[in-house]
Structure formats: structure tokens, C-alpha cells
Amino acid sequence: RWEQVRLLRHPRRVLLPGFPIHPRPHRSFSLSAGQGARMRPILLKGHDGPLTCVKYNRDGDLLFTTCRRGRICMWYSDDGERIGTYNGGSGAAMYVDVSFGSDKLATASMDQCARLWEVETGQELRKWEMGTGVRCVSIATGDKRVAVLADPWGDEPSTIKIFDTSSNEKPVQVLKMDHGARVNRALWGPLNRQIITCTENGGVLSWDPDQGECTHERDDHEQNVSDITFGLDQMTFISASTDQSAILYDTVTVEPIKTYKADRPINSAAISPLMDHVIVGGGQSADKVTTTAGRSGKFQSVFFHKIFENEIGSIKGHFGPINSIMCNPDGRSFTTGGEDGYVRIHHFDPEYFSLE
Image (cartoon, rainbow, N blue to C red; front, top):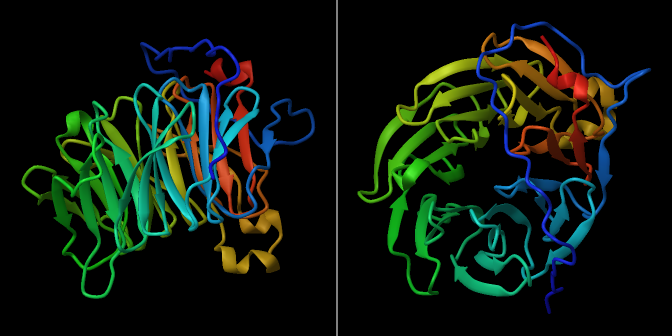
């Protein structure tokens, strides 16, 4: 029933992130592909539907992707070679999270189930039935708990159920999101002390997973917040909203630090672990792309300076909205997944790291 996944090659060497000791002086530059541009992406076609999530493992040598047709793929992140697929669900695969040691994989699916897989063999270890569509999963630090986000159904609001990874029994904790709006993401914070969520009405909230109470609530966005992504050290996270803005937050206080204004709806954003940059992606909504050219649809990946908040470059490629974007933990590449069904791995040229 499942296509087995086996690691046929030796583990790749891990490049540890080299954080700059002093911030680099800022100078505007262009990353737009054009005449003389050398940086060329690796184009992956392993899905037959719109991408919903791209995710690196902690070491950055493996890449996991999901799509609305249900397929979940694993790739080598350096050359884009596909290792295998995880075929266990019948609904759209919405999100994926991988454990710290890259031995377990949690997936969220619209077939009303969350699953836990063994990464190397593709064996299904756990299956939790939720009774409604599952939009997000997040593995806690220590890999002993999984937070599963279920969509609202009838009079029931969005709900976070926390499961023990060692059993298929009932959840150890249930958090009901009683603020009315659908929740799009629910991710564990540092040391499992909080769960950060974002909603379709522009809210960003922090929850105490033990008490089940909301500790912080922000309404800085005016429209749907479709995604949130942590920095490598989890001390900050960035939100992406269709109100054409992305906001950098302090994780502990959930106070906004910087705001990045774009000229397009933003579906996903990522924080570079190596440079003082953030990358955002989005574009015109999917129901209008058939009447729009790629340039006017604004489907590029856009770079902003993390400190000065100004746009400093862009990379084109997708011919549909970008649905998910993530930086490699080593900071030397990033990956995007689009509505067009393609995954694009971008490895930066050496000149990118010598910018002054």
C-alpha cells in the first residue's frame, strides 16, 4: 500500500550555519534572473497538484514536500534527487513536520487524519483520526508530543489536540480556539512553553499548552494570515498575510519587531539564518492566474533587508502563486513550492555571501 522509502546513499555532510559576528553594511542589489545571471534553480516535478508545504529537516540535507493531491515526497536538497513518497492518505496533504533527528515525520491531511511515519522506511507508525480536516501538525522539542490542528466543523471551533507519539490513544491535552476564526497554523515554540497560532481574520496568538489558555493576542494584520515560520533559533518568527505584509515577531512577547510591505498578497515567508534577509512569496490569487501573465501576477520570491525593511531583490520562476517557502538551515539555499505544481530549489551564488 505504501511505497517504501530507503536511504540508498550515505548521509550527506552537514554544513553548519555560519552566523556573521557583526552585521554587514547594507547595499541594494538585484537577484532578478536575467542576462548574465548564473544562479539557476533546480526544478522538481514530483507532484500533480498545487504545493501546500515545503520543509527541510534540521540538518538541511533532506527536503519534504506536500500537495493538494495527497502525495508527500522526500528529496535530497542538494541536487533534487527524489528518494521516495509516502502514500497513506486519500485527501489533500496540507503540512508536514520532521523530528529533530530526522527519524520521524508527521503529516496533516484533509482525509481527517494525522499520521506519524518512519522517515527511512516509509512505515506508518501512528494514525490519529480527528473527525474533520487536519490543517497543520507540529512535533514538540524532544519528539515525544505532536500538536495536531483540526479545522472547525459545525459548532466546533478549530481545535489543537496534543498526542503522545508513543501511542494511538486519546489526546493528552485539547485546546479549543474559541475566538471564532479558522486557525491556519499551530507550531510549538522554544522548549515547548507555548504554541503559536495564526488565523484567517489576521490574528497571531500564543497559547499555554499546559493550561490551555491564550497568553498573547495580536491583530496587526488586516486579512488572512496564511503562514508563520520560525527563525533557526526560534527566538523570532515571521507571519505572512494576504494584506500584502509580513511581520517579524519576538517569540516570547509576541511583539512586532519589523514590518515588510510588498505589492502583492503574501502566502509564505522565511528568515535567512545566515544573512540579514527575509524572503517572501505569494502573488495574485490562484483563481485569477489564468488571465494574468507571470510578470503581472507577481509570482517572484522577494528579498527584504531584515533590519531596514526595504526590498532589495527578487527571483522569478513560478508561473503561479508561491504557496510555501523555506530557507535551508545552512543559509546557502532556499526552496519554494507553487500553485503550478513545481518545487524550485535555489542555491545561492558565492557573490550573494560577499555582499557589503
